[in-house]
Structure formats: C-alpha cells, structure tokens
Image (cartoon, rainbow, N blue to C red; front, side, top):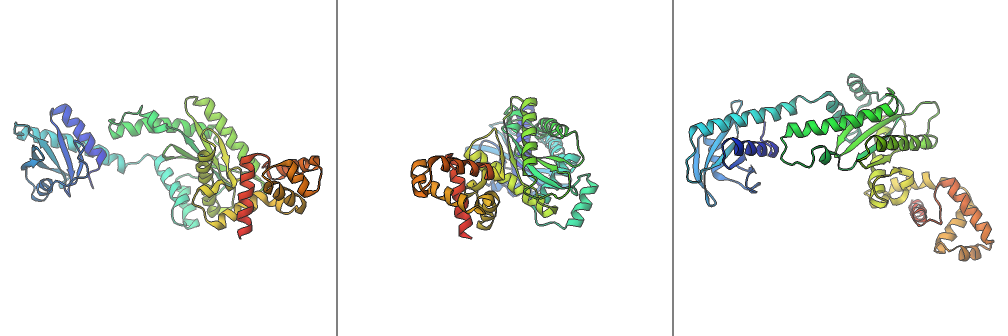
Length: 391
C-alpha cells in the first residue's frame, strides 16, 4: 500500500483548511509527492522520519520543517513535512493531521479496492482486447460470469467524447479524487446507457468506458455467412446511427467514431478493436474530429500510424480488390494518377475520349468507394497501390 500524488495533494488541501499551515507530503522513500511545487525531490529527513519512526526537525531550503512519519494500518507509508514558520508544531496539530490523512487515505484505498461492477467489466474487456493473447475458453468463461456476451459475432466501434472528463469536473483540478471520479462516472454512465438504448439494449451488444474520453462498443451482427466484406455497410450504418443519436442527446459534446471490420472469433475481435482505434486516430488526425471513420474509409492514411507493412498490404488489398482484378480500370486509374489528376493528359496517354475516361473514373468510385479525382481519395489509392506492389 503506497501513497500516491492524488492522496498527497488532498492531504495538503485539507491541512491548509484545518491547520492553516503549509504541508509537504513524501512517500516512504523520502520522495516529495506534493507541496510547494517541489514534487520529485528527495528529502533525506523525511526518509529518516519514516525509518526511525519519530519527528525529525531540520531545515528544508529556507524553511524549518518538522517531518512526521505517517502510519497507516500499522505501517509507515510516508511522512508529513509541517512548515513551522517560527511557531513549533504541537502534538495536537500532528495528531489532527494524522487523523485527517488516515481518513483521506482510507477513502482512496477503499475506492481502489472496491471497484464498481461496470469498471470491473470494462477492465476485463480492455485486457481481452489489448493484453496478451487470451485463452478463448477461459476468457469466455470469465466473460459469462461478468455477463459480457463475447460469444456473439461482433465488431468494434470506438467512440470518443471530446473533453468529456474535463467537462464533467468543470476543469476543477482541486477536486478530491472520490468526488472527481463520481462526477466522471455519472456522465459516462449516461452516455454508455444511451449507446445501448440506441440499439434497444440488444444482449448481443457490449458498451464500456475505457477512460481517456473513449467508449468501446462491441456491436453484435446477426445473420449467417458473415464475412469481413459483407458486413462493412452494416457497421458503417450502425456507427452513423449511434453518432447521430449521441449528437442529438448531448449537443454540447463533440463525438468522433472509429469503426473496425468484422472478423470471426476472439482473435478477430481484438483485430477489429485495433482497426477501430487506428481509424479513429488517423481519421481525426487527417480530417478532424466530429466525424465517423471506418478503417476502409481511412484506408492508406495508416502510414501516419505505426502499422506493420504486412497489415498495410492487407488493407490495400481489401480496399482496392475490385480495381486490381479489372485490368482496364486498373490501367486507367494508374495512368490518371501518373498524369497528376489531369483528365486531358490522361485521356491522351490512354488514347480514349475524355468522356470515356470520366466514365471509367465514375466506375472506379462506384466499385472501391474512392474517387481518383478527389485529392484525398487519390492519395489513398496511390498509397494503397504502393503498399500492395511492395509485397
């Protein structure tokens, strides 16, 4: 059991109110956790107070400080440095500070030990999606106990609420930790429940808050013969729907959404989460917040992220597959890109009429969802062709 900076900060705030004194708080190693902007410095006399279990009076900079060991549950976990300012610290003041600190520490440690059910579920799902490869049978067993339906066909949608935690606490950095967490939890729960209600609380869906203003939705997909390709439109439609629902319900919050593709089994769910995260990160970086980004729409802008070459090539094939299998269309697009998106130059090089070229480019947009005449789309196609040809 260790003292943390949030606990130390709250002890100092209470001490100012009750004792009308400035206080430093150090951990059992003598490292100052909070107080007068001296965090991270090592106070040797604080360490001595912890080791010897007694008050050590010594100079600290220009101040005279009384270092008092802080004992919690029969163990010394840190020390208080009471600045004496010409008035010696009384035993009564030390006893009062010790009592205050015990109450504060107990509240924080209790909050860490007894986690709300929803946080336990969120932590479990986060571990499943981001931790070492889990054992499927054990993971499903634990998920069943936590009433998390991971056995359904699902894909991941990641939803970011811009500035959520700061808005929930009104930007007050001096709030006690328990009060801060309560405010954040209340707002997050309203959003989480609204997401689930949007899909009529279907048991095939899971929604958890992962922290850092992000919610993850494991969206259930019904039907048979499900593949990565035939579920894309469904997932984009559902992501658009939940985005519109949240924007209407929480008008003052900007939401951004990243959508992964469907892949079978637990390993596929992990892959879908990484795609949703990548789509959200790259999409907001390139085009900005307040939009829905599917991994295929983000496409080859994955070069802005740390993605393996093999994964880039896989995405390139998924996005450009209809183009790659049509030799005439492929040659047309390649020539158009090499001509700097100039219709006249490309038509001359291809020996076709300008209207024929326009028809083929329209067909390209229809089959791959990217228009070579739009700069951002053309860049994605060009990057995709480059990654595909490098394999």
